[in-house]
Length: 128
Image 1 (tube, rainbow, N blue to C red):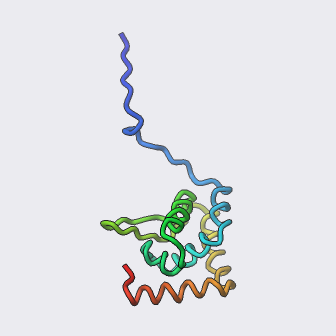
Image 2: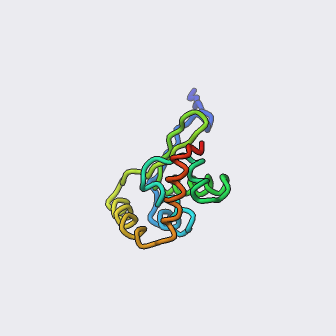
Image 3: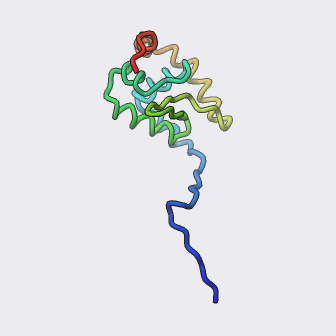
């Protein structure tokens, strides 16, 4: 007799495919996600600081961070109840060029500067 043992779906390791080019461009298609990416260029940022800097509700920030994470553009580090996000390191030439483009293009958008000012104030005031 040949018995096949099935493991529950929850215990099987999930294979993640590399993010597709279209999912990355969709991640770039929203102004809130662009604002988040600009703030993350400064380094690691807590979700609560992003909420304060962007002046939008926490669920909205979390939803956009999830989309950016799925696209492979950001990574998360958890510390107790807090989540800290950073830009993900480039995993391909395409990803590297996008990061390079972000660095020069975002300087051309004056409205993104206001978010950075609020983030700096939040960092000095210890919003969390």
